[in-house]
View 1 (cartoon, rainbow, N blue to C red):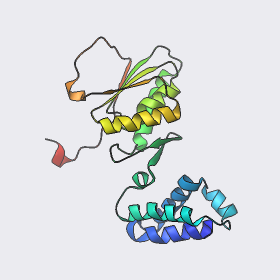
View 2: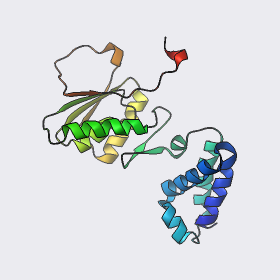
View 3: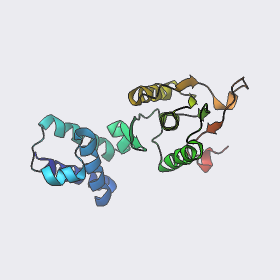
Length: 198
């Protein structure tokens, strides 16, 4: 199957679950994530054949989405501020407003040295890692209550070479004051439904 045929095939697979516009965008995202072909590449090189096992891998991702799994979990990755982050059901998928939060902090603190940063509920580590990379003189502590989430965050830090992040398993609601002082404390926790509020 060619790249163009695969894109059409994936779009048709996804349409009943997500609608035509979203299906087209998701098909492009699957092809880009698995093969690195951006939409312009598909337009230019759509006649090229894909290996059957590559098409099957793409179909498996589409099947997961049709079954109700978010695309990022089906792919195992999400983009955040131009960087690739591993995601699993143990972590939340980074949100656009989280990127805006990081942009604001970077804008306010660029050029400062010896910064101490605490990221509460780090999940994928996207905030902590981004701040460590974009504020190169910062020492970042990242905490999460989930061991599984911290494993994902550590994988992301290693992949992105964010060496100044220290990950700690801790419950944010039971932190005891210590000797650490922070210039920045940041958190973007999950949305809480009214039914979960209590």
